[in-house]
Image (tube, rainbow, N blue to C red):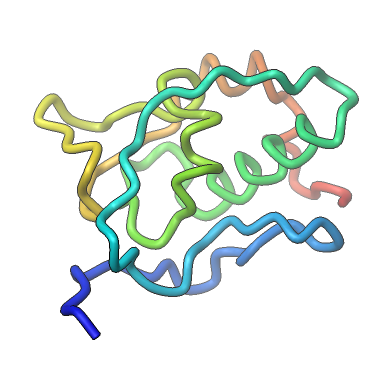
Length: 125
């Protein structure tokens, strides 16, 4: 097995959204290379299952990291990419989209505007 890059595992972070099969974290680094972070178009509209999943992921990010910068680590790129460039942004100017050590931060103003339910104390799934 190839040497995999080091990857911070965020202890206590939910692994996914119950009952959906959607993952929020990955178990190990990708042996084919780090999946790049990039803003993907989001088709999810409020009230849809996809919007609820994005909101649940943002809820987990907010309640785990708050307004502090955080390392990408084992957070799932597919989930991050649906929020990236809007609700989640690069925390520093020398951001590397191909690094598990890349630092991110929640853009609280945009996140609260697009997903107000993510900031509630409890998120019903």
